[in-house]
Length: 554
Image (cartoon, rainbow, N blue to C red; front, side, top):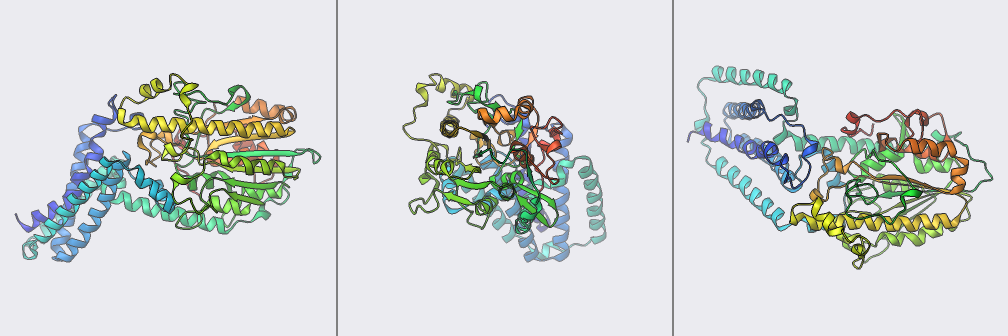
């Protein structure tokens, strides 16, 4: 085999392997037996042009690389360039094999916004088949790269007709550019540049978040006003769920496998709420930080404090990631009182040791009993974080109250191997509802003017738990409901009416801070409540196109 062909094949291999991540969709993803149940979220061009374009682009790209290799006539150049391409392609393909989705910068966020216990649990969720795939893929990439690079004859790369080859490469580039323009799919250069693009996007957003957090300025909310009389005691509770999706949720899904212990009649359920990002760090940052000026920002905890509220942050999550601070840690530090029920426990070494969410109830009761006349309590649940079987009591018998539970699981999940995950995920959300029921009961028993809002930071797909690609709508469709005491309802009749009318309005959670401010009857020139609050009759609804886009933190 000539050195040029050898070099060409060396560059072509990662593109050829990556091709199956593109071409299998029309044949498998649109099948009724689709194991990930994600077919409805793809719009794929399955014409011959699609395949021809990809093949042409791969050949063109590899040809140009082969020409450059011949031009430099260096084995070191070939080894370094091909190693970079192989690494990027390897990450791309491995991500697809493990999650069923293409890599997205949210995946990189999930990787770096983690901690040692979460990383351990992630590894525990890997099945034997996942490990086997990773091993085979690693051996294939390493073997082909090592074998082909070692058999390249530098002298055989010398080129005699440089002008002809250069002209051919130029023509390839021109035609390729035209195809890229026509088929925007290739603007991502998927198999090679997607991992690089994802990491670059992650670093950009991470730096933006760090910059904005560093510019927190509570004085932005100077002059904030409350529409509630000073002599009225107010208690607001914001419950932040974890990884709960409307799909399969006992309160929402028509074909839910379990009925919720919560009474729907006492709640206002919102049916078209979407998380702004599929990871906690981004979604909560966008939901609870206001960035009206480029060099200044304010978080909702400081906003509430400026309005005269005592603030509590009670969490069953870890304080920060292993790689540094995150927005939830910042929010907790801004609160008057913060409690992480797992932080000081030396026995908690991984997520399997995490206390159940019911352990938030005692510190929540303490916050309710606090003598402050006006208070807001943030409760951050561990909810339905994978692995799901660790998120509810072992002795919880959901089947007693839901005799058709197993039939529902089987109906929703044709594949036996996925039923365990779906079963555990459904149970975790049912357990969350039992905790929410107790929280509401405690709030109701306290009496007076009070209200509660529950939402999840993002959703999850139990059939592809590691996925962070927003193309899968189940990880963006989140539950959201409002509970209000009689006193709150009596003094906010118009607001309750507006909330009832907003049940089916399309709304993305990056505007949540305006809804919370409206809910608390707060006003300030920097709060665009009229157009951005879910409870405003003049709300400008989120569009379907906006739902598909993860907003930048800028």
